[in-house]
Image (cartoon, rainbow, N blue to C red; front, side):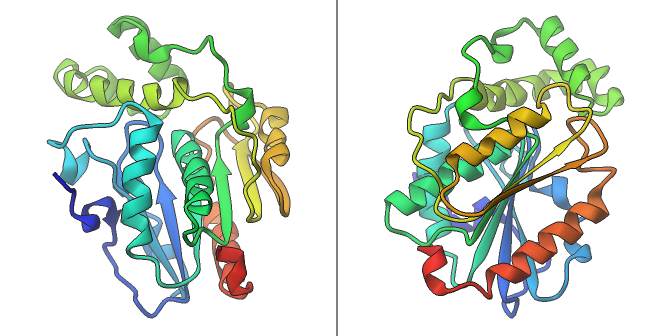
Amino acid sequence: MTTPRGKWFWRPHPNPSAQVQLFCFPYAGAGASAFREWYTAFPADVELVGIQLPGRENRFTEKRFDRLEGVLDALSEAIAGIVDRPFVFFGHSVGALIAFELTRLLHRQGRPGPSHLVVSGRRAPQLTSADERTYLLDDDAFLTRMKGFNGTPKELLTNAEVMQLFIPLLRDDFAISETYFCTDHTPVACPLTALGGDADADVSVDQLAAWVRLVGSRFDYEIFPGDHFYIHPNREKIIERLSAIARQAWRQPADAMA
């Protein structure tokens, strides 16, 4: 059964007159509302569009993905049907991986791709470790691992009933990330910016900078104070950076999207 295209995108404030769209891919366990405090902070010429994967929020009852290939196949069809202006991808953690491989898939399909790709809180794809199997841990060990990321509120982690519903979703998102291996080192054609936190125990500065090896165009990176979820305390600065990138995107030649 085909999923209605609109379900993939959360647009609480549609702005058809905006010059550029910014698609935001959330981190593991999160839905598009992870960016709910971002929407009103962007300038009027930038429309923020949250990516809504199945199995969360308004799509909670839908079957989740646990492998990247399924996500990419579905998203490439959905996104190709709504883009009608320059756009930028931003993804955090597993969202960065999805945004990266979706960018490459759209290019292989000959479809319009982002004018700029921004990855956050994610080591370069070629550095993925075969030893990572968080999604296979028992519940106690899995919850301990989640506490280390400092991204899930403590009141949720200590609520057994809530976690019974939440753990399967987190496991599937971690499976998407941890069963992925980068065997194709074809660089993305568009400029790429990598963002990270200086105290992120999972992604070092060197691992973030290594994205340069998979970029065929302009590359830069920026480090902010904070851990893996540095994006929350640094929200205003990140929005400022993304706004500048988005505004530059619609001034680029049309062939930058191809």
